[in-house]
Length: 133
Image (cartoon, rainbow, N blue to C red; front, side, top):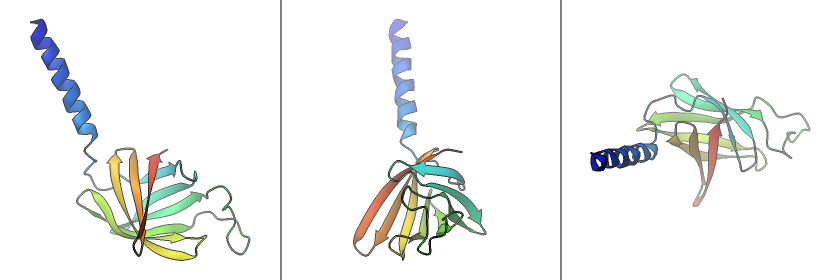
């Protein structure tokens, strides 16, 4: 009996950890408020028609003002993200300090985290974000 119980516990723990590796597959799972450990910016994602947008709630430290010296807040930095096969693709992100638009996509890793992939030509950067609301 002890062997069956031990086997059951091992199988249960394996299936729980295996499920943690599968990203959530429901549309809208990025809606909410998020931050990252890279520059500590805060962004809110919302649905806008049939796409998703990212609106700056709190800029990164050192980037609180725009190029005209005005406070940066409530800027739409990400637009055009479309949900496709569990990911958000074909988006565009505005990088204020470079004054450039770049391609982006989002790959959810858990219910409360995702990877934002930014591409410009052959260069790529990935930033991990986590849900705060």
